[in-house]
Every structure is written in structure tokens, then in C-alpha cells.
Image (tube, rainbow, N blue to C red; front, side, top):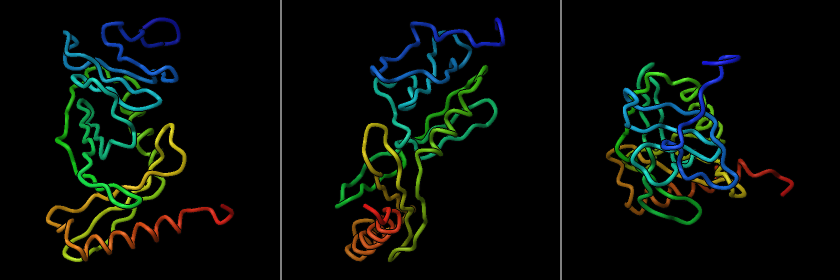
Length: 178
């Protein structure tokens, strides 16, 4: 490990194409380390093996650490509405991390820190979660809605109630002096 238990540097072959203002916070090799790649957490998001682009912290719907495996569920945008987007779960991706170091902690902290508002609400025929998140490089909050399975997301009463709920949440989270 070296002096003061510092982790070795990320191998150049595993280094993702970082943006100019992006820095690596934590990383871990996947699997047995025999060329399976690495999961890399940066200040701007999560780099996963096999992906060419970073997954922004605001695009991680769920991340679960089992003690050996990190399972990440990315968001998939399914609709854009006035002032918010509707997202659904993309397939979960699971990575075996034999030497995770600080990676699980950084993932949890960064995903949690991106969320500024979250509330589950009933809507006609189902329910949905309204979430406001900070997005690196974007002023203000980004609003998303993730409907529970079986909710008729495109039905007019659902859209109208969701619009009303998002507007109320935005009003409740906007500072009065703006």
C-alpha cells in the first residue's frame, strides 16, 4: 500500500477520458483485476466499464453496495415535460469489487448529495416519486419524476396531477428572495 496507506494510482489503461475540470475521487478494479476494467468515481459522475460516457451523479437512480458487489441502476429518460423529465429504471449493472477502497462511500455520498428534494406522491391510478437534484455545471435544480410500475404515466389525469405536484414542489423549494 505504501506510505500512510495510500492507494496506488489508477492504471493508465483504466483511466477514463476525464473532462478538464474532472478529477478522480476513488476507483476499484472490477472482478479479479484481469482486464475487466475499473469503476471510477469522479467529482462529476461515475465511469462504468463498457460505457464510453460518464454517468452523472444525477443519473444514478439507485446504487447498492453488498460488501462485495456494487449494483448501479441508471435513469433512462422516457419523456420530457414542461419543467421536468420522466425517468424509468435502466437495467441494473452489477460489478464485483474485491478491493473497493473508498469507492462505495464516494458513490453513496455523491448520489445522496445530488438529491435536494424527494417525495413520493399518489397520482390517479398509481404513484410517483418527484426528485430535485443538483447537476454539475447547471444552475438551479433538475426535476425528475419516476412513476411506480403500473402507473398510467401518459393518461391525462396523471400528467395534470404530476404537473401540479412538480409545480408545488418547485414553489416550496425556491428561496423567497429570488
